[in-house]
Image (tube, rainbow over all chains, first blue to last red; front, top):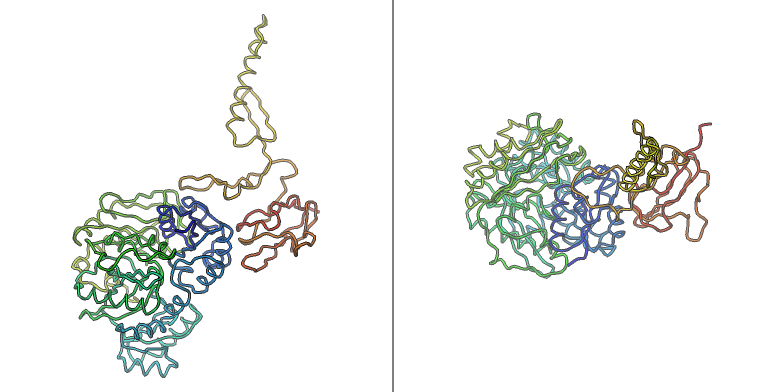
Length: 452
Length: 168
């Protein structure tokens, strides 16, 4: 096992990785920006390096600073967390060039799967079903229009360099297509520096279900079940659960097989997630691959008993996978609620500020992943995720009741501080959510959001 | 040791002095580091301690602590009096290796006592083969070079102490 690992991230995921290191006896080195000098991981990790000022471009996205810090402290490996540089092939390559093990897939795999068009082509060749649309990028507005017409409106126009719900526009009919296409290509250029887009049929009523996989360096790959992630606001997940309610075991097994086949075809190493859309008839379509540990990974950990971050470290260290597919089982139901420092009553505007009171739920089968603590001052310049609250129970009904109990115990107050905990309890109480038959339209319905 | 004496007043004064001395010894033992000067008055009590400014502890020596705000870096509690009062730290613009010479074997950009003007290059930070100049941000005299050639530094770490020039 590595002697030491540098955690190239912040917030709750940095704490998560630091804890895995602690449990494995690995020396942890945190990096922090000036804004994060009082962050929990700075104290928790064995060492910490101040790498830059607050703005992410000069700190958590600063490849030179992070690689320098890694070399200064003599670490063996770098864990990129999620977001930031976790899916940046240049960062993965810079680490490897300097003799650091990058805890994730090889750089060329990241590059290929990060290009959503190239990923679609690879997965299509591997036999995964895709949504109707263009296979490659559309070369011109005329070609795009033609593909859209052939696919059938409404269609989604998606950035090839996008992902995670960003860089997506919907064209509802041929008349509005040109405007949507122009907006999509401009946005893609601005956000990602790459104006290429592709076309996909738009499913108004769909479920976002993803598969967690683990693959080692030696060609072994397993899936760890699915996560239902349809509780989303403007393409950002708020609540996830496993298993996907209402999805039959055959469908889940089939999705698992697709994901494993796709991972092997891509040469995937490490922990990854294959995202699918499932329509009303339980038809499954590949969406994209996420080449990193995900925010909602604890949901899978709770139903499988497997520590995904520890497995990431083991795989990166060259160990073979420690379990075969038959040895992986899913027990019970797990839910995760993402508590953001946002005000649901004011369009979810982020509310940074000092946590005067920060009380976490506990008790049976409740887990909390957070970097917060009483007195912590939440920075305004990073994403507003404050805490992940999870519950597990033998049945979905019990897991929901347990989560509601936990959210009631949760308290985060301070001057100007608001969180989404109360809103999430509304989701838990919603009839459609409780029935298990819900899709990506649920939150928009609850908030009356017509832009989603 | 107070001297037993027929003079009651002297004995009383000596006992008082002994008490004050005890308090002072206790106070000094309680402090992290000794002050440069200490003044004690006994009537309506006054303690007055002055420390010399000191660079913050290197990262490896930071004490582990429960989550909470960090104590203010020692450098910010600079001495109220004395020549160091006007010293300002020039801090590293990046994480990397500090170099005090323009190239290996050359004379250092500056040494203690060198006068600098704003914009003058006084060092280099190297990160991943990229050389970044360190430039003085004010006019003054270099009073300390806190890192040695090739030493790894973090972002914002003090590198030089520069005594600001007097107002003309």
